[in-house]
Length: 450
Image 1 (spheres, rainbow, N blue to C red):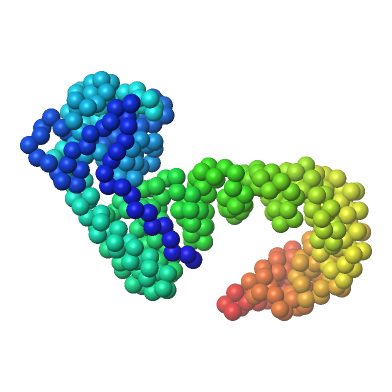
Image 2 (image 1 turned 90 degrees about the vertical axis):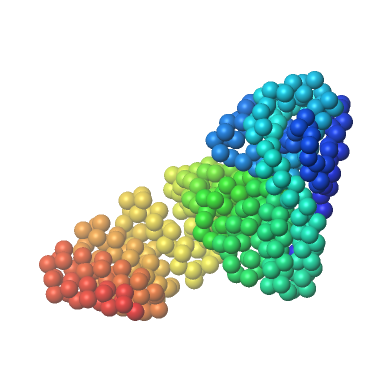
């Protein structure tokens, strides 16, 4: 994992606003005795509705500097819009009028600018002192950030994390320090702390694509799929033409059981790539099957088969056709798969499933018996054969098939064999064989203790 992200940002503001130069007094110096030059923060957003929403969020308790970092297109966004003390005489009439209506510690009304719509916050003395103190600490924090990154590049991860944590303590708003601290913590196998630091980095710089991508990966690895989805969605929104972002989003949709969303995301990946990539096609096919989207599954399977005409390709197409209720066509594809790999049991299992669906128990039993012959140590063919016999009213044969399956599948996981024993106990009870049923229940309990 690379150590990076070291960006020194200007401390002094020089911005043209409505064609008027903003004069900033005492930024970093905290001049006193100038009551007519208030310290302010500035938010600029494209629409009036966004400006009104920002005011609502601020009045509900969200820090105004956080809102600025998340939404503003105006100056000093990385500093939460802090402009220091401004001389009202240098402002445009619209801005000056808004400032005049705003009391200390409050937000101004929304006003229109050439860049969109603005909102000012007039800081209290305490807020100004805190902002100025952060500015004074910033050079030291930046130096700690630089040294921390250098240690990280030298593989001294613990030393890097120590310096980066100090940088964050001095300046919690230093997004690059939060970002690199998160990387170091992740490498030290402290996932929760790493996630918190990267979440802070993403909060401070909401349009940071890399932060959202890393955060999505870490959340997914931690089993927090819903949160991972949100991060990958933000990343894809920031780089809408990025196949990587859409692929990660599709994969996490898949993992979260959101098949339809995954289908659309995989389609977007193929569109961005401009070619039928086999790995993406296979992922799209599986997502379409999960979403029960037959037409998409068939289309993806046919495209995949054109690029890989092997046993797996024909099985995929058979699955897709079966999902689309094209049973006869599915049978043909499964038979092609069997012809290509006659020693593989899966083709016979799938073909048997079609015959069961078509209410043709005899050919289904033939395929299952062949699957048992090919892979006698696997429990699946025995289970399917037992169910088929049970549905056909042959309880005796159902018992024999399942009993043979338990005895043959000695290499299967104990939990799998325990499930078989439980099912066999039920069949024995139905046949009035209570002693045998109790023996199977005992076997199931013993297997689960292993």
